[in-house]
Length: 312
Image 1 (spheres, rainbow, N blue to C red):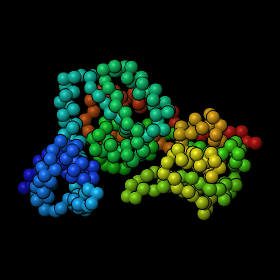
Image 2: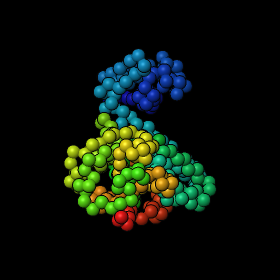
Image 3: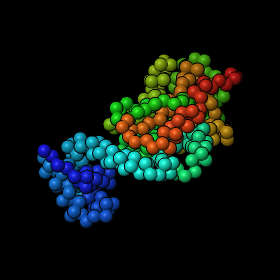
Image 4: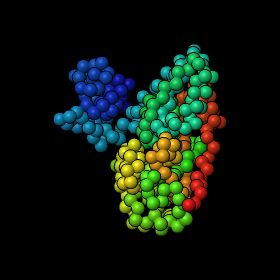
């Protein structure tokens, strides 16, 4: 029978997240020999090495990568249990942590969170921004209670519920030949350079394939695609006339207002991006957290309407 302690699990996860024994020791306020000893005991119990030491720190072995999600789930479960016990005494007091994609903070969700804070003045809302995959990771590890992201997450350990949809818009430089025009035939877009996000190794990043799928559905073949990891950099490149991009409307509201970007109305590329509320399937939700879920669902903006602009 394997007898693993919480200290060993916490030490293992800390080293994995921080990439080294010394950094984990500092984070856990323990000596490095004590950290090393805990890992050795865990490896003896499991019969496999969990880390490979390198000059810059430590990396997970295959056994370590296999163990990590289970170890994170154990720590998240303990955090849930402690939160549930504390919730018995504090009622509507306490804190709720929420991670959301940065562009959602500029939509109606910011107003929803503000209204919730006004209704629950004794509940502290802790907010973090991240990309969609990172939002799911934060929820999965129990570092936040709820997440708001684009697209659903197929992880069976998460509940991923679509609550609204945001419109996609095709944007270009105001000096582009198609700025402000309607493109009825997708072939007019042939030869354009498209700016989008790159795929991420071993991680499902929905935007990495969304553009290609829409171009293929519209019959636009062999398109030149430039992959840029930063949304801000993408917008600056499009503003400069380097290419065109299919982006979530909320992410370009300011640029459209200022006139630094323009819309191309292309019916063949119209669509929406689902916004989903993510939580751990077996995670603890306090009364206030359940209320926040209800408020978000009730106040979520209506499904995106497909933008139509007058043809020139």
